[in-house]
Length: 532
Image (cartoon, rainbow, N blue to C red; front, side, top):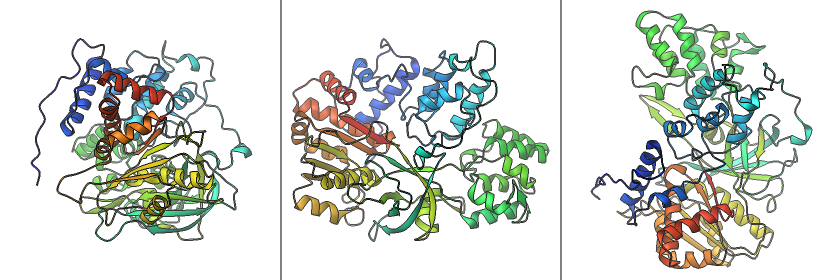
C-alpha cells in the first residue's frame, strides 16, 4: 500500500501578484494540489493568471472555484453580475440559459424562477433570493431591470419551432431499452440507454445534451405520504397527492421553505432548530443529508397540511446527459451512457433521481418527456480533415463515442485519438468491442487506456498523456483539436496541466510559453470541455 504523504504548504502565487486574497488562496491551493500529484515546475503568478482566464469580465466563471471565492470576486459588481457568480458556472443549459443569460433574465424580471440552477443547489438558490430582493432597493436595481415591469412577464405559449428544443416545450420519446456496460467485479453500475425519436421527429448534433424529465420512485412517494398521515387521493392543485409527489415536485434536498413551514408547526427547541435550517444554518451538522423525507423524520409528529407541504417544495427539474450516439449514424435513435447513483445515509438507501429512473423504473415502450439542449462551444471541427484528440474517462466517453460514430458515418478523413480510463480493464472497459473494432480497421488511429485499480499504483488518463507526450505534441503541432469530458473539479484540471507539461517538454517551450499555447488553443476553439 502506498503511504500518503502530506504535501508542504506552498505559496506559489506571491503576495505581490495582482490577485485578491481569495484568488491567491484558491490559486495556491489549486497548483499545490497539482504539484503534490506530479512533478512539475511551479507556475508564476502570471502563468496562473493565464490559465484562469477571465470571461467577459467574469473571473469567477470557473466551475471548480468554491462558491465563497466566486462571491468574493464579484463583490462591488452590479446585482446581475453577482447573480451570475452565484450560479454553478457550468453553462450546462439545464436552466434553459447559460449562466450569464440566466442572471440577466432574472435581473430584468423576464424570468421569475430563481430555482432553475440545479447544479448550484441550495447555495445558489439562497443567494439568488437575497440578490433578487436588492433589485427593488434604492440604487440596487440592475441597469437591465430599471425599465422592466414590476411584475414578472407572463410566459408566452411555447413556440412550435422549439418543440423538443427547450425544457419548456419537451417532446415525447420512447424508451427502447438498457444494457449494463460493467463486467463482474466492477464497483460501478453504468448503463447504455437507447431511445426512439422517430415518432417526434427530433434530431440532434453530436456534442449536444439530452434532457430527461424523470419521475420520483413510487415507494419513496408512499413513505412520504405515510409520514404526512394523509391519503394518496387527497386533492392538491387538481391532482392527487400521490401524482403530484411523483411527477411535479423535487424530493431531493429539503428546501428552506419546508423548514420554515415546519417551524410554524412545532415549538421550543424544535422550532428554533427548524428556523436555523431555514436560514441556511446547520445546528446538528446534518443539513447536507436532509432530503424531504429526512426533514420530516427529523421533526417527528409534524404533519403539514398536504397543500401547504406541496407549496413548500421545489418543482421537479429535468436532468441533462451527454449524448453518446450520432444522428448521422443512427437516424431517429439516441443513446446515453449513465452511471447509476446509489448510496446510503445512516441506514437508509438513497438514489439519484434520473439515473435510477433510467436503470430501474422505466420500461421498454414507455413514453417520456425529453428535449435536446444545444451545446455551448463543444462540437466537432467544421473541417473533417482536422485530427481530434478526445479525453474521456468513465462516462466521459459518451460524447466521444458519438464523435467517432459521426465521423465514421460521414467518412471524415481526419485522424482520431481517444484516451479512456476507468478503474479496471476487465470490468470497466466501456464499448470495448466497438472501440477495438474501430482500432483494428484503422478508423480509430490511436486508443490510449489508463486503469487506476489494475496495479498497486493508480494510473490516470493524464499520466498516459504525459507518457505518450512526444506523439501528443506531434498531433497538436499538426493542428489537432482537443476535447475533454468528465469531472471538472480534478480530472479536467489535471488533463489541462498535463497538456501544459507536454507542450513545455516536447514543444521546446518554457512554462510561460506552454501556458500561453494552451490558452491560445482555448481561444481558437481547439481545446473544448464538457465538464460537470
